[in-house]
Length: 603
Image (cartoon, rainbow, N blue to C red; front, side):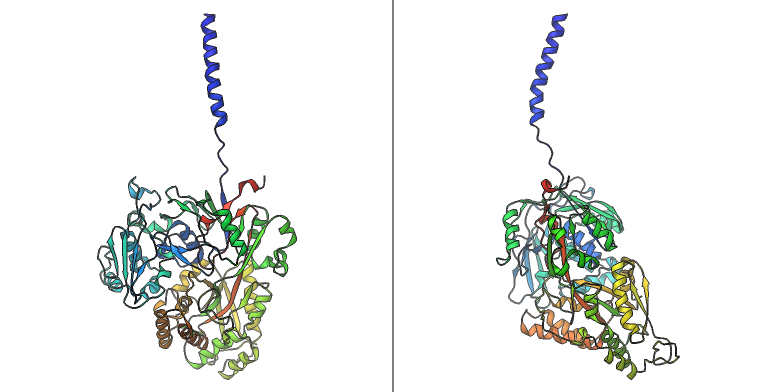
């Protein structure tokens, strides 16, 4: 009996001896790589067809893929294939674009696919584009896509408006799957920059019909794409968590940096050949107030401070140089002019500020002249912007830094003279100007209640007080204001717009009459402007097109449906363990290109 016990013990010891080395050799699981940062404004949802706001489109740009994208490091911006297998075949007249898809690209797994792996096909591209035209989706992108003149698309949309049902199975000449992996676009007129449209995953990221049909009205909550990340958890207006898509294709870092940019060269050298994405997870917090957003970065809770709040510029980047205390911590800085404008509009069908008669035009011009843009740049923005002279954005093809117009002019004396000339005077002795008919002149301006907006609004009020115009600010939430603005319910609203491509002409959609209720928030209508807008859209880039764009801008300046304020300068701060970050002038899908050096994370 004793012998048998000894034998059993010996065998157990021998077995453990065999197992123990194997366990000891099992490598430890590497620490999770998580990118953490914050948005200053809440998202609206994640269905590309229904979006226009920047922050929702940042999320969808990283969940979905478009046919094309941008080289992350190339400057000036350069388009490259994404889902496409090579650049499109383009007819000499820029009216036919034929795209071949890469094979074997898979959507993220989802119950809509019934347990099967789902490959992207040309029919998915056709379906994605048709969704923009479906009236049910109320897509804010429909006017922009209508301008591309895809043959048969307008008729398909009209049929749906007449019948109440969109026929997704009806083939149209301008949008066809030639075979499983080839899609062809045919346009009614030349569109030299159509490939730019094909390179925006935030709006035209490819979706699967099964997913849309499964989730129906809840599709804003169920994004399923082919991108590097997929939605894991969504706490509305609070936190968005995304994780690496396990079905993401074999993609390796091969970005082509500007040879004149040593920082980009160093990033490319360090990252070249690494499989993408490098991150395991991205956590985006919604923090509308600048101070807690800034403190989250200072306390190492966030890895990236995207767009340093202007309130803290003098502390973090005195004289536009990284503060010594931040530099000592190894924090990095990237400061570039943004491809954007900020503005406020006047609703052109509003009885107080709207209209096209000389007295109404004079009122809007006077308000614009009364506004001191340099004061905005100097005080609330603390030097992190430059006064805008028009609508064309920096880093786009037609931007002219020497262009000057009344849009960027501050002249209080002229503003007062215009108001007096057209009868906007104080008729009842209360110290405020009235309308020419004697009724009160009171502006209603929708805004946000955060501290940075309060500082900006103080400049607006101070300058209008100085010429005797009363203004009331209505505090609200940005997503609700966006909906109200599109519906034509606001008198005035201040917001910003960023370029999603190097095309300078796209911003002019702000005044295009066919975009009312979508990108044309001011509801401006002018036949000559529409003519110029449509003319420049079919012209190739060059001096002739630049001149047409300038003429269109001058019409907007003359009627002043919008007061463009500044082009912002973006300063991004990165923790020492965030590797490879570089702001792109147009693309928003940067997550796949950055890494977290876990060895440098604070312990």
